[in-house]
Image: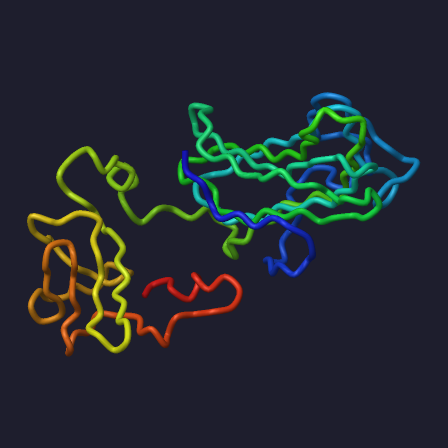
Length: 267
């Protein structure tokens, strides 16, 4: 099973494409229409979080769900407004992706204590890319503990972050890429970061010691580098030559701040 990028927490600082919310009845203004239910679930109109009503899950475990058709790779943003009636309530904003044979290929969602005081609202978020073989996707908001407290849900959103609105298609042979490393004798497109510590020559370490290298290419696979001219091989270590055009990272270039790994993409 593969996993994706997962961001869960509070606040509303995410940037998203201005697109139509794809959730049916996201604010529960038409009862629970569009949602399947599990456990003790009802519409609460006495103390709604927003508008005329909110979904109420509990006491005990329970969940509300919606299923969507999703073709292949898509970058999506999912959110929900949650509030607990007591401090023992644990919730989960969850997404599950299924392939054409209804096999589960992706399951994202971490349990979170909605609030410890039982009085404050929280916005939960998931920002992720679907599995390449996804045909259908289920989103759910779950009360995961069998406790007396109730979980209130409102303002559920699902936005498509792909500006074209079209599912991304893989540019590689997925069957080849997903072949287990213990099968066959060829490693395809292993990613390597050439790193230069303290001004020393930049090196990149391979997972295995190769019998031979078929090619070394840039991140786009469009540029091929020349052995001896751009790099040398010793054991499972590639060393960048002084005049090489191979991209590399110096110690002083290491990114910092929030999500620093994003600065390493394509390097």
